[in-house]
Image (tube, rainbow, N blue to C red):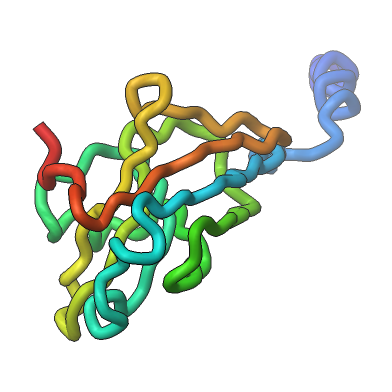
Length: 154
């Protein structure tokens, strides 16, 4: 009789649980949309041999040296940006919500895998932006190849 009473008391607990021990669903991802403007176009562009690749990179941390560029799981990276244009746009979808304190356009300038440097930073709002679930965050960056930002940042 005692076992039947315990069973009857615990039945409502199990009946209310419809998903077992599954983790809660992931919040919807956001996206980053941006525009890159190249100062001094077309004269300021370096030779093609010095611009192996250009990409917008949003970091969830402030880098201290080029070795930090290996933390790919803490970055959102655009597709390759176009060469020798006055401006370009990018869109990065499926971005996990969060804060990005250091972002901008990076230039790969030689054969060395770690030969990347910032050539323009997102500077609005102190350089900090946030991607919220289900929303598109818009950013703009000016690239000035003749006057690149300091790296590592202060």
